Length: 173
Ligand code: ADP
Image 1: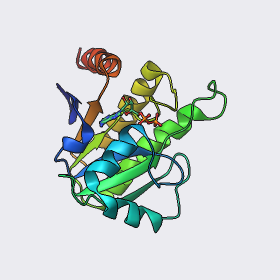
Image 2: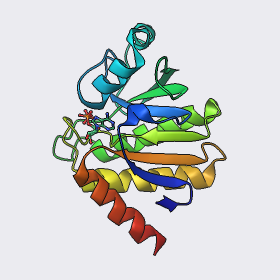
Image 3: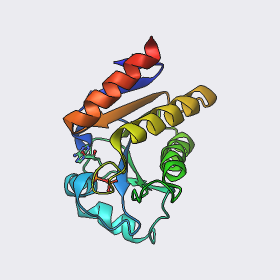
């Protein structure tokens, strides 16, 4: 499914051969559960060694590393906000994650980038709200910038996949 450079897939993000994949990391950048754990396991221990040199990352910001044993070229580590009811700047911080990740991808000449559904796992951001923010932010960036040319929303759970499917379909109508 495509909307002007935006693609939806249901997959394990560690399998994708895009120029960059985005990791929903935590502020330490030293690994964790969920997609973060899967990325570190698939990339191998060299990823953690490079992450140690980065000294963490603020919420809403992003940092880039090599991808080691992954098929992608780069991993962009971004730290999503923990959902605390919506009055702690969560929506702006989530949009910033997508924007900062795309900026880093552009600087590194990445033509394709894959995003997981940042913050919608253990960080409990409401999935529909998160999907709307992700789509609006990515769409705007793609319109205003040459790179990246293709963005993949990679859904792992059925609920996120059906939310994205519905929202992206609405956009094309
Ligand atoms: P956060 O702490 O940002 O909420 P999680 O890793 O707990 O991060 O969840 C973020 C999203 O990543 C969830 O929607 C979850 O279904 C998804 N996810 C978990 N493993 C993978 C994977 N291997 N590939 C893609 N998405 C994944």
